[in-house]
Image (cartoon, rainbow over all chains, first blue to last red; front, side, top):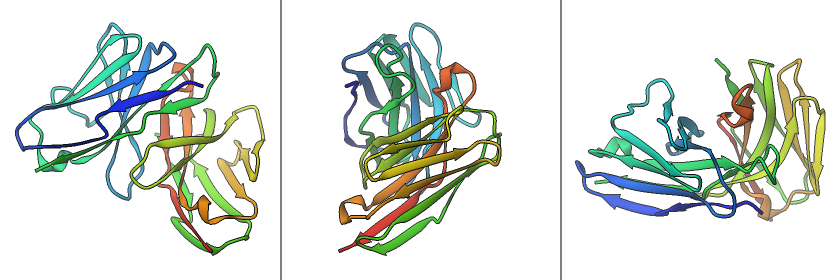
Length: 117
Length: 114
């Protein structure tokens, strides 16, 4: 079945540096992918919609200059956290849908734990 | 703005019990509703998806119902097992964008004790 993969699963970075998280659809093409963030013991919050070949759409309150999203191909979207701070430490997860084979079921990546020290 | 609420926030039961997890949403104009399972530190696994035109879906020991007019969904777990211990999230898909954009509830943390 459809699989969405994220890399890395865990990353620790120093405050002030940037870190990139990849989201790949392994056996289907996804023109749209979605990025969520989850703080401990809280639910997932949609951050942005990643659109292949065009600019991402950000949810209210999400800084687009801080969370750079690039969707350069039909199988890859990247989220770059720029100038990371400890408060950016969170679980980041992406999702995509395979409209051709899987109808309306949305598939999520395994998630990426970011710790900023 | 859609708001999704899950009750209870946490639940601890002995093995073998039948469970009901509740989800409510404020805007009934939804595309579909999906129940997910999340193990600690892991991603989400889709359990059941109910289209807005449907009233329930079943998969094994799981049954999910949807009452769109009242803004409610329930996830019924029969004969619970320790392996069912996880956080269960319900998510409502907005109309538009083919239902890809989800609003999540806060989740119910379930522990099934042997």
